[in-house]
Image 1 (cartoon, rainbow, N blue to C red):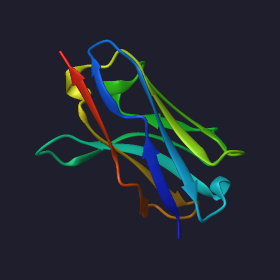
Image 2: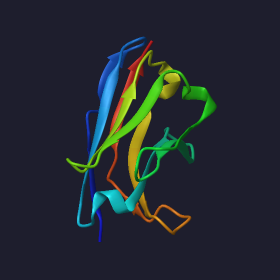
Image 3: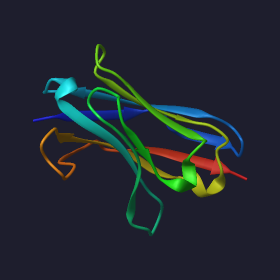
Length: 119
């Protein structure tokens, strides 16, 4: 079983930056593909960005391209999301997710961390 714990959320003004972290345990971190999702109030959970086990490939939704950067440190078992130029529409609960290398679906989820961007 994989445990994921996010941190780093908070209340910021538009234009500010935040860095989210997700600490993984229970499985060899480099055997997992990782991703960030977010869910705004009253809306469905949406994919934000993903990164392969070896950091060779990332994928990012268009609305955050150029502002959000995903990275990971396999020596520390940590996934990061650097968020710059934050906008009010980025307000959401951000979730860290993991999937095994041969799986298609993200099976493991963190509890989420709230990001609120004030205008």
